[in-house]
Length: 478
Ligand code: NBP
Image: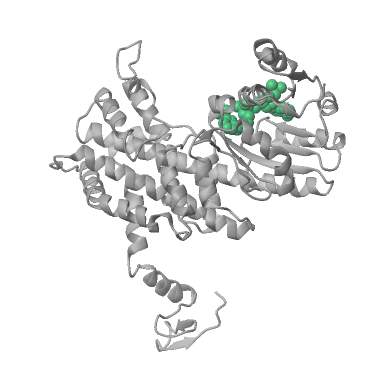
């Protein structure tokens, strides 16, 4: 029996994707570096569909129909290069290697270019939804040549999550585009989780609302514009009691957040692109700060807070909901704006409506909001920033008074809200007629002759700061 696709790397994600493919009627050849995982998969789930066991990469390749499709689900980084190196001599022109792991998009670009020389297609696929999504339908973000998508796209679309009957999978763009979009998805996910944390902190330490009661509030919020997977599971986590102590579960969990690196990658890439993803960056830094446990312990001893008692507005809970919504919108706007910058830099034609569409189900940031975002970009007049779409400009504008009240209260109470406040600063900076960047330019010109432009005439100028303070026209080279 020849298989339509081979999967190598049968840890949790690979095994579940292989099962998903088999359950959807494909014959799937399965391989893992150590045979125990292949055994475990076939023993527990071999009856779910047609699997072909392969004990070596040679066997895997030999079992596939041509052009061959090999899905790598091995650990991101060096293992991907190692498997590609072993596979390449076994493959022919037009065969396709698909990397479904969380690879860095720059690695995907490099691998795609190298394999293209031997006529092998390389498809970097972002997969979101974790273990359960991989089995039941993830959100899938494939990059690579259009031709390769014609071959692998229908299979990926079949195993993807669906929203209103549409698969959450579409061709994103060439080379690393799929992995880039997945990376930004993860960056937005960091911000999404951080704003939830900030809201919860304010409810507890501002308004004195305990976790179990907060769970009801989040459940309530989940039926409105905030409706999303993350809000839903927030209620579940907040409601959970630690069986050992009877305390709220979150009170027995160490408050330092881990990360696997995709949020950091998003911020590093944003810095390289000059893309102001301040909310995402603050959420990555918030995790980093939470992990500085010994410094935090010292700070608690050494640093004064001078918190101020504030009278919270009567509907503080509703204010917090609005601040959360507005900050979340900013994070999405920043992430999508970063995609626009990346498209220009890397020569991709990213379609933001298509991208928002495939985040509507299957992935961690799935949310009702994404359907509205899809509509905003599909309306024909694509806004240059999500916040400028009429529906969003109106929605965020309506939230501004509550947002300001919440950030002001948080500052007075000494409750850190880095994403709430930086998102509001972004919103205000975008709207502001004059920014202090003019002073920055003046300073740069004084200490480094970096020149400046004037708003009353064309050209590039320098003031003779050390001389008679006259202005000279300068070559625009700085
Ligand atoms: P892991 O990332 O834990 O990788 C384990 C797999 O890689 C095993 O099959 C292992 O084989 C194989 N492997 C390693 Br390690 N080094 C290898 C090498 N040098 N040559 C060949 N195989 C090697 O698995 P995972 O959690 O299933 O994730 C797979 C990919 O999917 C990763 O890139 C991950 O970031 C991404 N991802 C994960 C999630 C999630 O929720 N876990 C979500 C989305 C994406 P062995 O059994 O012989 O050691």
